[in-house]
Amino acid sequence: MPSAAPTQLWLVVALICGPIIFGLLAWLAQSERTRNILVITATCLTALAGVALAVQGPFMLQAGPGTGHLGDLLEAVMVAVVLGIGYKQKIWPVFAMGIVQAGLVVFEHLGKGAESANPTFILDSLSTILVLIISIVGSVIVVYGIGYMHVHEHHAPPTTASTGRFFFFLTGFLGLMNGLVLTDSLKWLAIFWEGTTLCSFFLIGHDRTPEARRNAARALIINVFGGMSLGFGVALAQHEGGNGSISNMVQSAALLPLVLVVLATFTKSAQMPFQSWLLGAMVAPTPVSALLHSSTMVKAGSYLLLRLAPGFVGTNLATVIALSGAFTFAVTSAIAISQSNAKKVLAYSTIANLGLIVACAGIGTPMAYSAALVILVYHAISKALLFLCVGTIEQQIGSRDIDDMSGIMLKMPYTTTIAAVGMVSMMLPPFGMLVGKWMAIASSGHAPIVLLLLVIGSALTIFFWAKWLGRIITTAYHDHYTVENLPFSMKGALSLLVLMVIAGGAMTGVIYRNYLSPLAKVTMSGSPLANDSSVLLKSVDEFMGWPLITIIVVVAGVVLMALLGLRNSHTRLPFLCGENTPSGTRTFVFRSLMDQPVTAHVSSFYFAPWFGEIGITKWANPVAVLILLTLFVRIGLI
Image (cartoon, rainbow, N blue to C red):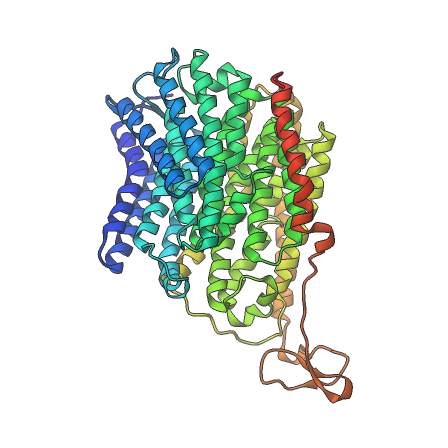
């Protein structure tokens, strides 16, 4: 891999430090106008730098003198902040784990395997994908936050938290995530990892309500636990003679350090039994939810697991990882069916799709790795769009309950149409999510239990997406609609993301064939099933051609003909077991017994007795714990 040119060096600095510096200036800004200009500048520069770096191609960058000492300082600062938060807010588990982390830092400097001076940063195909997701999708979410927070300030509970501080952590998140996916240094990985944990803590607790504080504390406890596990893995890898790099950890394939780091990825990716922190994050303002669920926090775990996958391919550890991810995928997809809270549906869907990525990493074939990459890319764009749509709807109607979204096409046709596109992209061709799930199922044929869980989970996801989609688009026919008035930043962000979803769907075959499939073949060439997987990969390539195009054209033609054939004369009031009564509103009223007017109310099926959150979680979390324990059983530690 070639060494970095000066231009690439400055782009790396801009991607990591730029968002943090501009975020700090936005925090210090005295006026809302100045703050907004700084935030927009930060996002534009980040997006441009991300694209420019991707165009530059792969490189290796050895950081200059002094960065080793800077890393030591930042490591100490991170541990001190964790200890300070744990002590000040009396979150004693965090304080205790902070003490352990402080001990690990001391061990790192005293142990024989302590990392030498300067870290290395690498841009390869995998980190390029993540940099583009973070810099483009993440920046769009931050821009959306400008208009959203202006409205949120007038409707949220009174708080002393400043919006400037909010944008500091929101933009800073982009810089920390870029550093996390670019570094090859285990020590700097841990620094960026802990930084994202602290950002999520402050963002989740932004409104400072008792619920927000409680959920922020839960997120901090679980993710500091993950950081502690990562710290132990890094310390062991270095103690066993490693050079302190992720690349060396993959090549050495030492199972115990890998198990500890994999456990850390499970916490960040909210895999069962660690999913509660991501569900609790729903109390945060919508830009936070969108950022955590699409392009930053949860993608850190997915990225690191995919980076480590060649190190555990074909081992017992891989089998357990595949089973754990498939179990999370099936169970959380089932729970999503019983949820009427739109944000919770999106949250469980995120956890489920992350579980699918984890399962693919464990399966370990080029086909499965391709599926993980497809899901990683398309989930980021579609889920960001859906979260922003739900946040917009909630601000307009004052509710995030799905049943309250009945007839919303009349009130908010622009946002509703975009949300419908986002939901379709999660389950139908030509969008990548369906392709990714199909590839994951096809690649799991050698593991019957994993295959069964993936099939069940995929069927359940279709159910809850179709149910929600039907709720928002089912309404009375009208020959014209009035588009809602939204702040420019919100409408611009929604428009850009929906264009990205549509363009991504149209280019699924190109993206897969030219970028994702070659990366998977190279990365997982050492898989025991690489030869078998190549046959399946070829079949996917063939399907991406004329069969997929034919399906798209036929479906689009049928929908277009149906829409063009609609006339006012075709509309009829629904039969409601009684005479229809003019109501003066857009609700349906009919005469019932004793000539009394009754308003028709339609509710979705949630099947709570079978798919209730509490009932399933009670048995699913212990099962997930048992599966994780087998990580250590399989390598002979228990």
